[in-house]
Image: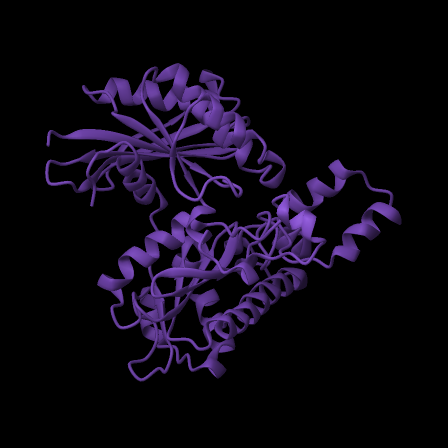
Amino acid sequence: MSEVSVVTVNAGSSSLKFCRYRLAGDGTLHAEARGAVEGIGSAPRIAITNGQDESLVKRDLSAAEVRDPSDAVREVARWLQSHFQDRAAAVGHRFVHGGADYAAPVALDAATLERLRAFIPLAPLHQPFNIAAVEAAREYLPGVPQVACFDTAFHNGHAEVARLIPLPWKIYESGVRRYGFHGLSYEYIASVLPQVAPEIARGRVIVAHLGSGASLCALREGRSVDSTLGFTALDGVCMGTRPGAVDPGAILYLFQELGLSAKDVEGMLYKQSGLLGISGVSNDMRALLASDAPRARLAIEFFVYRIAKEIGALAAALEGLDGVVFTAGIGERSAEIRKRICESSAWLGVTLDGAANEKGGPRISTPGSKVSAWTIPTDEELMIARHTCSVLGLAAD
């Protein structure tokens, strides 16, 4: 098999991450370049590294008028075309929501893209920008096949009892159910557990994807059993600007007693709540840990409390627990947050190794810990590349 390349795209409202992989003749994928356009719409800038994490580009894009994800795709496409002689064989996109329609990655055509627009109300922080990136790639990389990879797909095998939202049955049948998200991250962790932590790979594992968006997933034998996120990406644990689980009566109160509009409430739930809403300081855990403000400390305590509480709940769903894995920005980089969560989970049998935790793992629990704890970096981009190759009939590891 001759070597080809694929590009992955993960588009958000203010940033766009991408990676170019070389699919070698033996079917393995190797990152050739990865980067991000950040500050879209305000102070845009691009940073790109090669496969050895050496800087290739780092520059301001203010003069390029990067106002939205489409403009960001334009700048990425221009750089790829100037830096690499060959054209990408495919582009794979992260899509947050696939609804009940898409249980696996799918090649994108006009009809599929139109169907994915129906899920914009379920993921307003992500889905519109995922769609915009596809449309821009059609313009700036014409003729290149594109694939949608869904964060919801990995959770599609949940038992019906784990999918239910106990509203009238006709509402459930209309598609209002628990889907789960961050599936590409969880799928990657499940794929590497046999190499990194073989003793728990086939067991009962809770993975904590902790970043600006945060959730937990219960795995049994490498398959998703349950997740803290549900119908939308608002459920579950406290996040950077999202609240996690909220009493539905509180939402009714916002409408009925405070007179807020649907747009007001949407903005509050997606952009003004969570760590930012509690602390009044920041949605960034690093800033909160560095702050002496009482509400910053309270926000951290609440974040840890809700995660530890959900670990207990998911352990019950698994009927036991063999391991806990931390991943994503906070999970991979904050030894302090890992420490607090593990200490709050000691009753389950987690015994933290302080020195190993400070070093970042991968194993951060003591050898005798009944439930082992791990830090494993996620790689959603590699999962997107794997799926893209699979959908288009290319071999990949």
